Image (cartoon, rainbow, N blue to C red; front, side, top):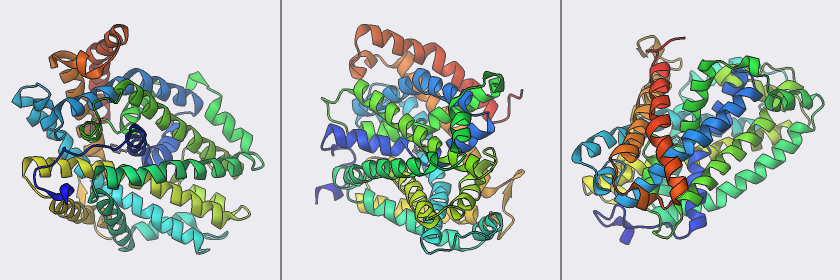
Length: 446
Ligand code: PHE
């Protein structure tokens, strides 16, 4: 069993270009697209924010995505060791370790939200999301119970069973089926949504920009989200890069992943805003938007149990395809650095993630577990997304922009595009990243 030999951390490869690109899209398209993107767009004024998000994605996200893939492929190591093996000093390996810790922490609450989506799919299909239910109370009661832990365990188990099969037999196959499957679900739900009476108002909110709603703050939120949405700063794209064939054009892959992420977010917007507007729901109702507001909408439409169920299945798939990419990061590290077998790495790390997710789950209602003014769940999200992710991204831009001598060769761009890429990595991305970091950690206030 080749995949279970010790120390074969990155000797595997994605079996095809298509498989690799679908896996990277699977990582990028996640709860960020389906759950976070709609509500932050709602909170920041709709269409103008969407345009800002696109600008950030293209100008800053894509250059960093290319840098991560290139570092991974050049180093063929973990998110930490790839920097060193690609030609950096040992200090870069230490800095890169931030991007091994970050996905671990992200997973501890990502499995919880993934679990909520599974639970809600079951609720919907079993006819328990019907008119007259107080969805707000239902959500609070559910998240404040022990049940989310069981679902989080299921989500973690599914991800573990995929990753244990390896890159091409596990992750690649999983995404090859589910990413096209998601597109089918998205299109069905989009058609349902935009044909609801009163849907046009929601379409306008999402697509007709009102630039007076923009603020510098919205810019930083958009940029931070572009990073999260492309799975940057978390070691995932470095790790996937380590398994990519030499002949793959990374420029093409970068464009495909950027386009995929954007298209899935766009369709998610065309599901959520028309639905919320058609049922008179405030689109800026925050994180509860998809678990409180949308169930109310689904319960009020014909065949709502079916559309609601499909919607939550969609969310669950989005979450699971991201989860496998996150899990692969510490697994690769443990196999390479500590010489663990793949099986041991997957089971031990998954178990640890589940254990750390327990205080997060309990802090949603069963127990008072606070760090500062946040409950444990919010704190882990805040710390990983606002501290570690921008730092991880900054390390990538600084390394590729200033310290990496073979960057030109590894990125494989034409001279003109290489110059533009380097310019973004040197002067634009790091400065903006520092602003995002200062703002999202609360050091800089407007
Ligand atoms: N990109 C994923 C999303 O949009 C989240 C994610 C971040 C996944 C970082 C992997 C790494 O939900």
